Length: 369
Ligand SMILES: *Cc1c(COP(=O)(O)O)cnc(C)c1O
Image (cartoon, rainbow, N blue to C red; front, side):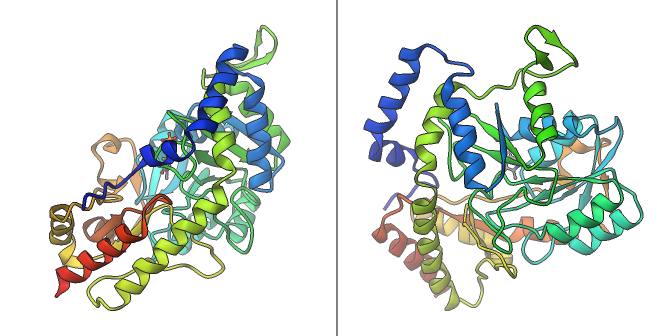
């Protein structure tokens, strides 16, 4: 059996008629940038995360750097961020003029809260990027209250957490803003790039809206140096269509995860993902832990035709692009480094068929027999 890690072709095939119709409407209307669908998508997205404002931009990375710019990050300002994530969680800080300060992770692959609390307490930072990795959230309320009391901003990197909740609240409720990505690999993916800032702060939404189009505050008046980061109308229209399936697709992923969890329960050498208290896990990624066996397990699954991936093989603290441009918190990022050597992601898309899941669990079992 051949089971690729992603199957976007199946997702399109299943909804071809609807998606084609959406494209035709946009192209016929002719407003390929800032067409009415962009606003409609923003409204639908804001409703999904139970917030007032959404500002669609060109990518999740832009959402992050624009929101830091909007919050007035000073050149050279320090921003705490996890050491285990996609590169953009930290490169966006540099784009916005700041210096990433890498924090180690806990048993859930999320930033260590005790380290963040120390950094807030000692006022060693100007801001925090809270990354909700793999599909579950880091606690936000307490950290945001403490940070706010010291004038430290908090932005949530919710690129992998659309649909997730902590204590029944989606991302963006306590922080200054949350950033979402619609990269094709994410749970709701554009046919290209896309991102959005979501926030309860009206001033923040207005600032981001201004920055995303050259800093234009009134027609023809550019009050500051901005970006050109617009979500294309056709992407917004297709995302609006796909957003309808957020819950259905999430249920599918959860049921696949439950089957992986069951299979892994009888394999003492692998560890299933853990879910932190008060969290729902949307399983954007299904990341198991295979200790020293990771590389051999990857090879075994590849030979069996099963596509896997490693999120992430190199912690951010060791990425060459940050050399000389970032700092590491006292104590290092050892748990992130350990995880980088031991984690493995299995395919987990809603279009994965029952017999494919059965084959994957069977092949997992065979490796350890
Ligand atoms: C995908 C991702 C981003 C960047 O989003 P893009 O839309 O690809 O620019 C940022 N942070 C995390 C954690 C991501 O997974």
